[in-house]
Amino acid sequence: MVDSYVAPLVITCIWAFVGIICPFFARGPSKGVTQCCLMLTAATCWLFWLCCYMTQMNPLIGPKLSRNEIMIIAKEWGHEIKNVIDSMH
Image (cartoon, rainbow, N blue to C red):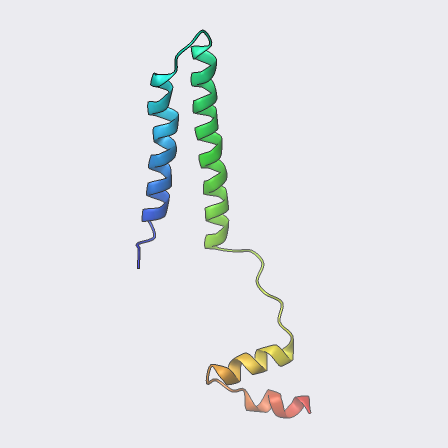
């Protein structure tokens, strides 16, 4: 498995390249505007990606399962809950 720091490091390197290195290659009469657009695009895209990535690490909302679904999952995973299943019928 890939370590947990690899994805943020790779994405950070990509957006750092776009925001730090690419502005040096801007040409034309509106060079300053192009550089500013590249830096702002890199910063905002990276920040948006980071927020989405971090929300998936610890989600606030979990799945809503019915009692029957929980009993089926417990049985399939080998942790059958007998006293609750008997009380349901």
